[in-house]
Amino acid sequence: MRAKPPNPKEQAKRAALNALKRARRAAEKSGVELSEWEGEFLTSVAQRVETYGRAFADPEKGARGQALSGNQAIKLKEIAAKAKGDQDQDARGPRKPMRRGGGFGRAVKRQVAHRDDD
Image (tube, rainbow, N blue to C red; front, top):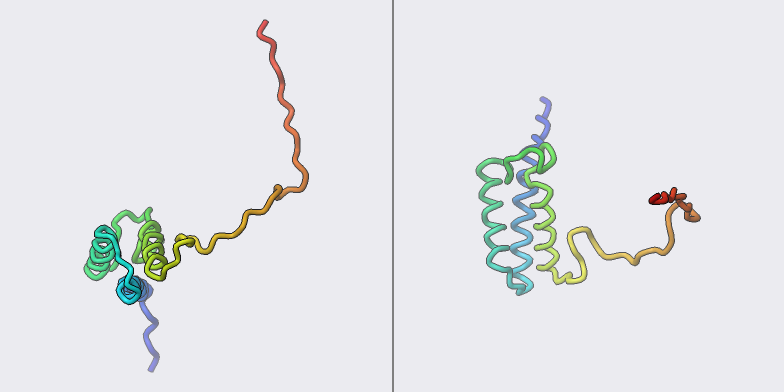
């Protein structure tokens, strides 16, 4: 007998709920005080994911088959980083030093036509 393939929507729902629970648990464990807004965010997003399978209504705000919108995922990562104590890290990851210089070798000068106001 063949096993049924996993449902991607259910997997996304479980992953989102687990990430929300991990962020809250990490904050409690480390003693980091979440703001009132952050606590409400975690609670309301978890309720919407449990009820509807996703936490956003507009399909343009998130990828198809995902339970969280792009902005919700970013905010969740920021809360998780705050709970871990990563103050110098935002949702995009650790900061890297900027490189000097351009990516195309030497700079190309633009020629601008000057007009006389005669």
